[in-house]
Image (cartoon, rainbow over the protein chains, first blue to last red):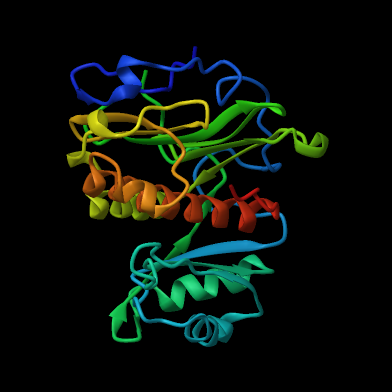
Length: 139
Length: 149
């Protein structure tokens, strides 16, 4: 049994999942999960397999991938951009993941673009991954 | 767990001639993202990956869930899980904890003809948006291509 998994407690519970639970054993609760090697275990930027990934939020719903690319290519070679659409409306969901090859490039993008305007909207630019828990688990 | 704790888990799967095939992921309050994908088709093996995401990623996830207003819905009138499969969405947010379960939804038509089309539509689109976010996180971090189903 996984101690970190929230139990109901004083919370208001709703749903069939409480009334007719399904066995969890061969799912998330079982087996070994593979993680990337990390030299740190606390919060802080974490390296991805092929580079460093930044999260951009507040992306304009009519933004094109090209707009994001042009802006973020100022800070280095953009390896990949993931910008998803809202499945109902077809507009940009509001976030993008931008991948750089080096930590320095990603850091420059964060330092310079955080709080700046992109297509009339203020965007927030931060690291997407952390090298460890972002806060201490409470038991 | 305090009142600011935020937890999300999604599962979709079925048991069939290739065994138990499923996709499941969860985001824990400390940022841990766990992802498991088991497909036995053509002897494909289980993928189990975990990483930590930053607080802004959790905040964006929370925004997507809040905007959907899924917490106001109720799965009482949704089609029950069946032989076709099962989907579960568990969310802990503030003082509320939902754990909704329904069958696999093949199309919007199935949603529209259900007994709660408005509520089920919220679920239908939200889980797609959540899967998109998780697939992008997994792809960018691990360079794996999750199996779309």
